[in-house]
Length: 278
Image 1 (cartoon, rainbow, N blue to C red):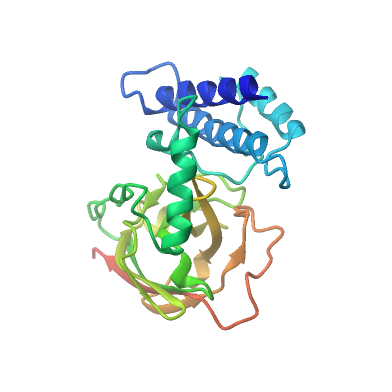
Image 2 (image 1 turned 90 degrees about the horizontal axis):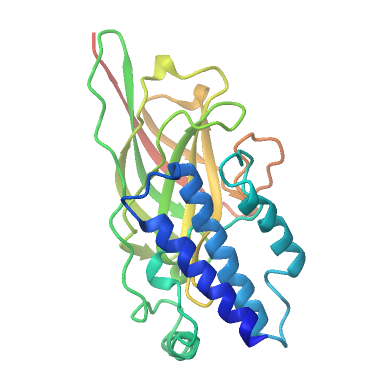
């Protein structure tokens, strides 16, 4: 069991080094993202092997699904089968380092759910500037004001990922991440950040939607997780404030099987600004 755990951690570490390598031209960005997610799954499997008395979070049969992806990584073009995010390099441990992390997790639990001292803060967001204006074309700025969650105060390093998808869930723009939210108040997490949609509204295909995925860091599992998501369809794009519903993960980019996150009146609060060059 110990040998298996060490091997899994070593493999996760090598995968994550490949993901973080800026000189590697062997993989596309999407392939690197999948490699990072595989590394996260390997970490979860290692944790499952360590916690023999608790329910396994990542089972052996799940590992068999990963094997298929690894063998076909250069041609794999399906949705990743597990709802995980690529784990940053700083959280991939070499064999023999697990004991230190266990102490950090215990310290974190003792300090309270909001404590993040054992883990460095997440890097700033990846928001992009507004596109150049074009005659007769409209650009959209979405201000993410706040999100309502019943456990808002317990979310660590919360941020939003924003993407634009067509009706089949295919990316139309680069995904953007907000910086980590800095203020929590009662059942709200405040962002107050502007997101510039990277395509003119007139150039968005019929059935397109803008997705907002709320993500937060789980110290005990050592990865970033999607908690819920929301989306805004074409007929909802108009200047002024808008409140949209939150749905349970995993994110359904095709909008086929939607489940509300809660029956409580908790929503994502946005404010839209349209810019038209006449």
